[in-house]
Amino acid sequence: MTVTFSDLHTESGLKSLNEYLSGKSYISGDQISKDDIKVYGAVLVNPGGAFPNVGKWYDSVSSQLASSFPGKACGVRVGAAAAAPVEAAPAKEAAGDDDDDLDLFGDETEEDKKAAEEREKAKKQSAKKKESGKSSVLLDVKPWDDETDMAALEKAVRSIEMPGLLWGASKLAPVGYGIKKLQIMLTIVDDLVSVDSLIEEYLTVEPCSEYIQSCDIVAFNKI
Image (cartoon, rainbow, N blue to C red; front, side, top):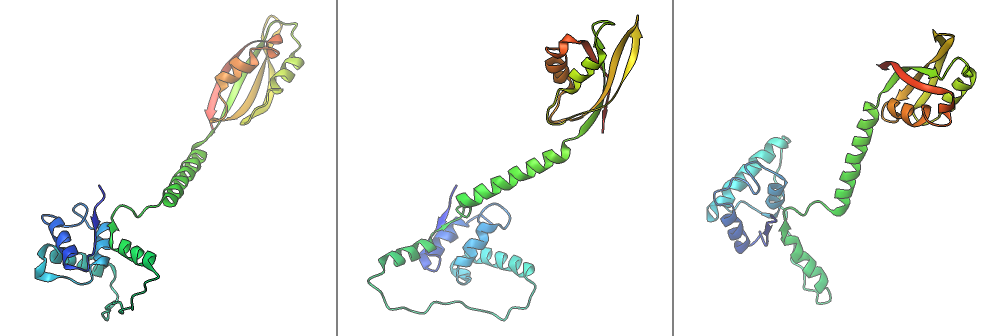
C-alpha cells in the first residue's frame, strides 16, 4: 500500500508522520529501508519532544546512517534562501509542491522495471547455456537383409543434419547369416537433439527406411 507524507518541514506534516509512527519502529516493517532514508531526508531536523515518535525514529535512523558512514562530519545545515515571488511561473511552483509528497513505493520507473527484467532474462539465458551439456551416443543401425547396400545406408544416415548433431566414426559389424549392421558414433547437444526423436522421425521413416529396418541405442554417455 502506498503511503504519502506531505510538508514534512511543517508542524502539520510532522504531526501526520508522528501519528503514523505510533507503535512502529520504522516506516515499513521492523528494519530500516529505503523508505526511511527518503522520509529522513525530508525531515529537516529532529523535532524532539514535540513529536516523540518522530524523534525516536529520527535518532534510530541517524545512528544507523552514522555507522554506515564512519568519516568525520563537521556538521552541515542546508537551507533555502527566500526568493521573490514570480507570477509568471505557476507551473514551477506546482512542481515544487509535488516534491513534498513522498510516494514511498514510486521509486522504480517503467524503465527500471524493463531493465531489471532484461537483466534477469540474460541471467537465465546465460545459466541455460552453462547447463546445456553434450552426450556421446553409439547407435546400431540394422538393414532389412543381406542384400541391403550398406554404403547407401550409411550415406542416408549421415545425410541427416540438424543443429547440435555431429556424426562420428562408424564400422560394419556382423549380425549373422551374412547380414551386417552399421555401428555409428554421434555427439549431440542435449538441449537441441533428442536421440529418440532422431530415430523415430528421421532414421526409421522415408527415405532412410528404404535401407534401415531398426535402430538401437547401444551406449549413451554424458560428456
